[in-house]
Length: 251
Image 1 (tube, rainbow, N blue to C red):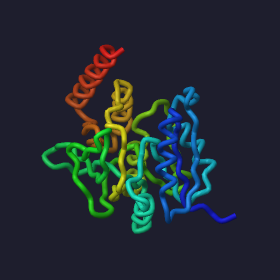
Image 2: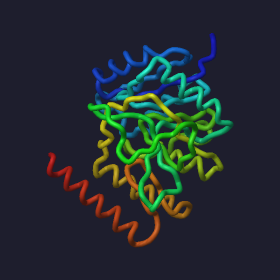
Image 3: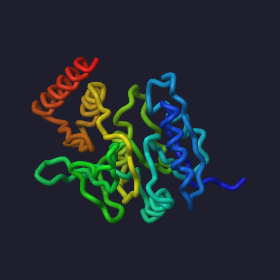
């Protein structure tokens, strides 16, 4: 059997969304891949990390591409171009299509990405485009890539929840001497990127405590999170309270 170079891994929560994803994926040319789907329509999994680890163990590809089913490809070579970029990088921890650099300008959040998002296909707010592989601290979860050999060394940690798993993998990569990159992508992320809720912030606070000894800041596509000092704790606590209140009002 001919070896598969890329393993595409996605979690299915809604069949209609997945069908549209599959229609888009079937337009892609020039890439040899297998597709591994994880059915979670009945909330069989309590953690994205657990689901992804299970799929990664089954994957036959040299590269593991984790992507949400609300990703749409805007040209027949969109996936192939991303794969071409990752071959240009000698070694890496993770590669994705949206991320935030370690060094910020005026301490403001920066999103490096070429994608569009939302139902109106808009440019991502506060984003800057890239023209080639560009180093970042962390990546967005919607679409990211690891070599299977990297995953075998550093599988997703055994944690509950559905947020920050790519962010944490990027931090793990940095701490072990790897760099992470954003590459140009002709992609539409149909979500508006506002799916985080108070549970997201709870996981942020756990991540901050865990990685405080190693990094001053965790820069994500959502916010910049300081890890040290009273301000860092009060800021994330206030954000948690705001998100929880929003959750209660929307119930």
